[in-house]
Length: 258
Image (cartoon, rainbow, N blue to C red; front, side, top):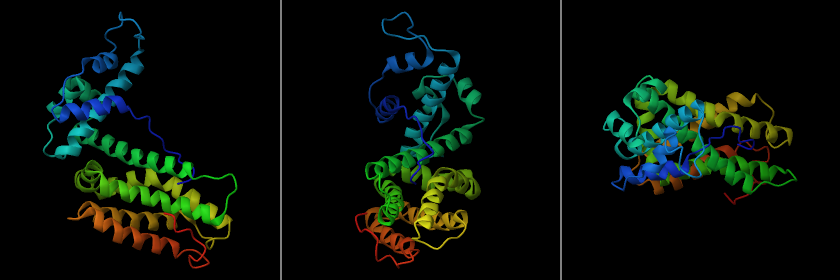
């Protein structure tokens, strides 16, 4: 995941407020006013274009829906709840998304891209100007580690990405989203490892698909486990052993820092 091609501009403040309110917190009108373009006469307020207001409305719906889907699940969440939370009309929901499932699809992409962003940040923090085999392996293993830890530690990720998404969107669409988000970086790192002579040269795409399939199976096991932390430990170790086995040296030169 070295190139981190997929990035998402997260509306952090809006999402924090939405999550607080979904848990029974106070109302914060200023955020919705900024999203809708109201309050233009107030000092410091910048008039937004129609495109910006439209993008703000869409982001507000995704943020609010993510909180409700994450806490209550897809089927237990009513559209009226996150429409009210985002402080938009029902018409706005159906303008941006065909239906509740269409919005959920966008939320699933949002969650997956959020994990990709986290992995990219951690990988960049360990980047070095001088590329070595060990560093390339570390980047690959670290990206998978970030993903599995997010699944184990974040109930919202578990419910949206691993429990509800395959059931609501179907296996094919779920795999498509996972592939769109995680394949480019995985393929790029595998290609780099081949260039460095760390693994045998082969077509990187099918190899990346097989590795991601194993990673997703580990993530599903963690999400459905009674003890996600314990399952994380066993499945993460198994996945790292499996991937490290691709090394021509048999994994003997790999770092154990992940």
